[in-house]
Length: 290
Figure (cartoon, rainbow, N blue to C red):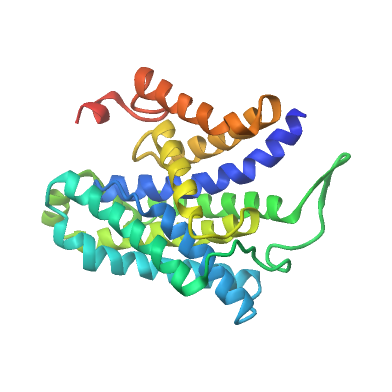
């Protein structure tokens, strides 16, 4: 029973981790609570549906196409909508991201319909992976494999390259980075590009495990937000741990108690962290005070 909960909880947790990574990356770089990140996951899922059904893209090109499509959309949103209000009051910026999410959620039914759909069987397909007497469906193990590869690549980009150093310097102090010759405007756009790329890949994975519908972004976005809080705002390892932990908690509740209580207990865990450890697992107390 416990093994089944882990095997079914990890793929869901990986999707939450993708959303939480986008939240944390953009927050650490721009100090912006990007509440439209879940809707970008939804856009990625619909982009995957379009490319796979209309243009018959196989899995690898589909991931690349969805990744680039959502990344470019994220940069356009940052340049056109967020950049002009970057130095306005924090509440105005948060409301703006919420408005962008609502706009995306209401545009998709016009373009893609409201009927719940799923990606074609050939996407992330293959033979079940046998683990003893248990069979792991292809969508589950591909989600775990792709998530691990993306997270390793993101870590290498941020920690081992000059571009990653520039992103981290911009996140630490934008004014000093400007004085050091870093194009902080480009770094901000690059942060949104990476966040959008994560949402595009996450949308393909979510579209294979969950049903694709206009409301999926809100639900996944809320869970990704909680995962980012649990892990610690701005912490990429925390976003991964928070997402995986949240997926396991949900499946444990559904398996041992009832699926009807999993959302309530998830938010109960969130309240517990906000009271007793508001900085999250990997956060620091000074982040909460600032």
